[in-house]
Length: 102
Image (cartoon, rainbow, N blue to C red; front, side, top):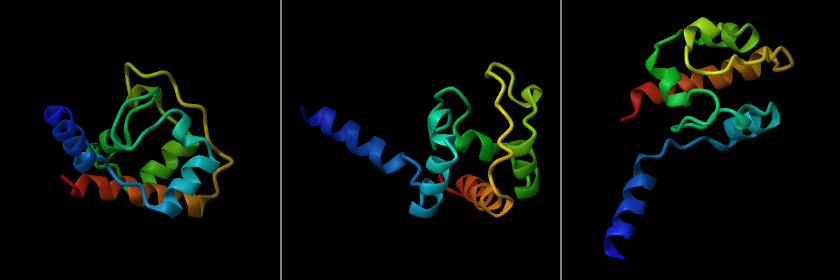
């Protein structure tokens, strides 16, 4: 029982926290249907995207015009042209903030 408790506690400490404003956007635009902060669902985890060191502008570009060749082994992402640019930029900045966290 103690081992399970320690394991759950360790997982909680390493999980990437999504700020409330960003989480609302990710929910509104259905991003969380395919992506999670720190785990693969259908698309790559946001922490994996952050490791690529794309600029914020590049991430925004990829939100609007995904490039399947950038992520072999994943199904192609649909273009998310309905996401306003300001929101896409906020999401991109948050994604890139994950590369600074350990």
